[in-house]
Length: 181
Image (cartoon, rainbow, N blue to C red; front, side, top):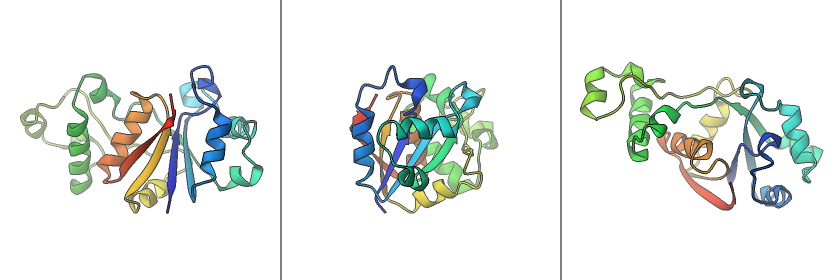
């Protein structure tokens, strides 16, 4: 199934989004499935209805709003390691190993493993559970895809975090650079 993942395209970031959101909405129509991850009220941003209204105001129909999969995401489930310079390939490798071991948090590894890999022991990474998808149904169905297209922002922050997350689950991501901020 041709899937597009959109990250943090919402009113809170309208001032830094450097592309035409109306054109993104048009592009969404080329996909069988669209998943929109957004920062919600926990992050002092908008709730689902406000984000949906933002997309409606940029050309999305009510029918399209009803078919999009909306997921409120948490902040920083990989950022500790990202922000301290752990190479992205190491993060993806650890996430993959976590999947193999059935772990949801890097603290479940023995400290010796993390230390032997040169990875942070005082900070952790983990798999989030997304609001609106408490059973991770959206994520589980993404894992059945070999590749998903992904766009949104921030380029080196939340968007990158979601790319690493999916890659750790074994799903390749392809950035749609036209719609990245």
